[in-house]
Image 1 (tube, rainbow, N blue to C red):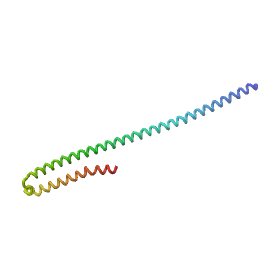
Image 2 (cartoon, helix red, strand yellow):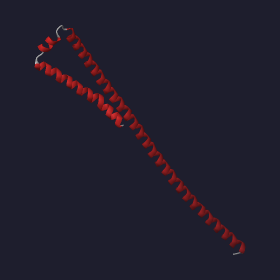
Image 3 (cartoon, rainbow, N blue to C red):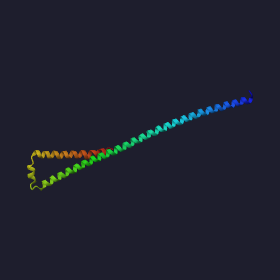
Image 4 (cartoon, helix red, strand yellow):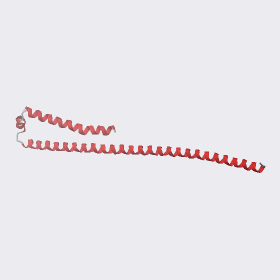
Length: 139
């Protein structure tokens, strides 16, 4: 084996070894890149889910607020109706010539029933008017 052949084989071996080292390094870099890509995809997916949850929470509170507003409007409508009805009764009573006679004509049971109804209406008004305000103030 001549010196020239020996050097050629030596260089060929060096080239092959260098090629193998570069291929190993390239595989390692590709694996690291794939791991980083997987990590960022997972992080993005988590972020997307978190964003959707936040949007759903926002929609939930908007819908809840609208529902409470509708309930509040219903209660206000009922209170207005009851107020109008009470005003009508007052107008009828005021038209009577003798208010005291009317009062005397009402039986104690009827007076008690009317008093309880007024108290019930006051409780309903307080529940539907002040309770939503407490919720709003707490939030």
